[in-house]
Length: 163
Image 1 (cartoon, rainbow, N blue to C red):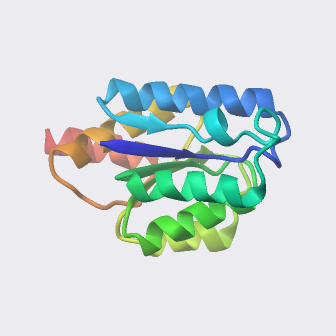
Image 2 (cartoon, rainbow, N blue to C red):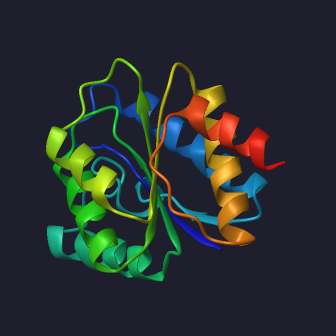
């Protein structure tokens, strides 16, 4: 299964930390036997400054279109992430959206995700719990799709109840 990792880059408060988080999310996807695409490896605003905006759009939209699932980190505001989520909804892709419990996330985007039947949403206190949610959701998607919009605690309790 192909996974597109979506997260703030150009507007990130700490782009080095953001890149590390997206690499970590990609590794989590690999643990679920998925193939992640991490945009900054190809279209980073600093590492790939020679690319114009249309080249970035073309490359990233090609990979977004080829993805089965989008893992979107919403802990930092980003117009690009919002656009990628909107495209994913239009393409009827599964979206795994995560952010810290204390993050200020766009109410519009959060509302969109709560209304979208293929969204899997979790807030988390730390990345270890985000990893567990992503692994759980990717595994569920590979062996039978179910759309959900829930907290991490609900996902774990639902999983325990099913098992």
